[in-house]
Image (cartoon, rainbow, N blue to C red; front, side):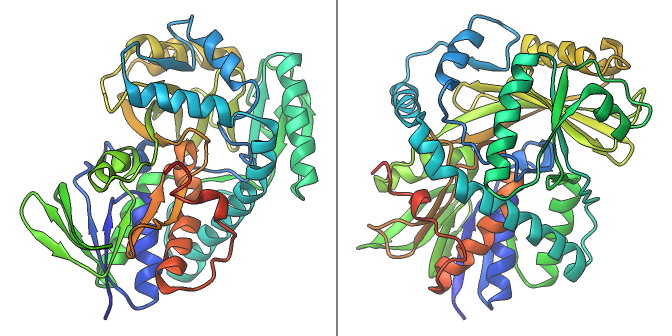
Length: 414
C-alpha cells in the first residue's frame, strides 16, 4: 500500500487525508500546530462562491496604501526591512490587473462551488455534524459608493452563472427578522454558506482516525532527498518515510520548502476573531461588512466576528488597536450591538497563508517527483479545503483533476 505523508493538520491537510484514504492510501498527518492557534479553527467558517475575485485585484494597492495611514484599519504592514516582504509586495503589485482577475475568477468560482457540494456530501454520506447552514451571505454596505461597487461584483457573479441580488436596507431587514441594520443596502449571495469550523475539524479528525489515518503531533525539521525524490521527513522525534509528500503547512509552507530551493512566495496575513456567546440579537444569515472588512458568522447561538489583515511575518501577538477597529465597526452596521458586548470575549489570532497573486499553490513541483503543494489559500482556506483535498488525491493517483489547476501551478514563481 502506497504511503502518503501530509505536513499540516489544518482543513486542507485533513481534507487531503480524507480523499487519499478513500482511494486506499496509507496516510500520516504530521502537525505541531496547536488546535486553537490554527486558522482552520478560529476563522469565520464561511463557504464563499461569492469570493471569485482574488486578493490581488485592481484598486487593492491604492486602498492598502490609504489604510496604512490608520492604526485601526483593516490592513496593516508592520514596518521592517524584509527582502521576502518587498519581493512579495512587488509580485502583488504586478498581479493586481484586470487580466489576472479574469483568468482567476472562473477557477475560484468553480473550486468554491465544488467545495460547497463536497461539504454537503460529507454531511449526507459521513453524517458529520458541523452545523452547516446554507442560507447565503449578505455583503452589507454603509455607503452608496460601496453598494455601487458590490453591485458590479453581483453583476459579474450573474455572468458566471451565480445568483446575486442587490437589496435595499429594508429588503435586507425583511430577511433578518428583528435585526436592525444601519446600511445603504447590500448584496445577497444565496449560494454562500457557513459552519462551525472547530466542529468540522474535530469531527473530521475523529472520522479519519476511525479510517486508520495516523496523526503525529511533532514539528517537521527537515526533508531527506535522493536525487529528485523526497525519501523521508524528519521530525523533532523521528524519521517518517513515505512514497508521496504533501506540503499543507499554511503560512509556514514557504519556509519549510526553502531548504529544497523551492520558492513559493507567502506572507502570513494575521487576522483576529472574537466570539460573543450571548449577543443582544441573533442572526440567521452570515455577513461581511464591506467597508470595514469584518466577517459576521452565527455559530450555534453565538456570533463570531473576524477581521484585519496584518502582514508581519509569523508574529502572533495581538495588536489591541486593530482589534478595537473590529469592535468599533460592528455597531455602525448593527446598531443593536454596543462596544460593551465584546469586553468578555477572548481574542483569537491566526495567520492566513497569503500568496502574492491571491491564488493557492496546488500541484506537483516539477523538480521533485513526489512533492505536492496544497497551500496559500489566504482567507479562503476553509471554503476551499475539501476541493483542495480532492484535487490533491487526484494529483497523487495520476487522475486528471476535476478542475483545471494550471493557473495554481506551485512553480509559477520558480
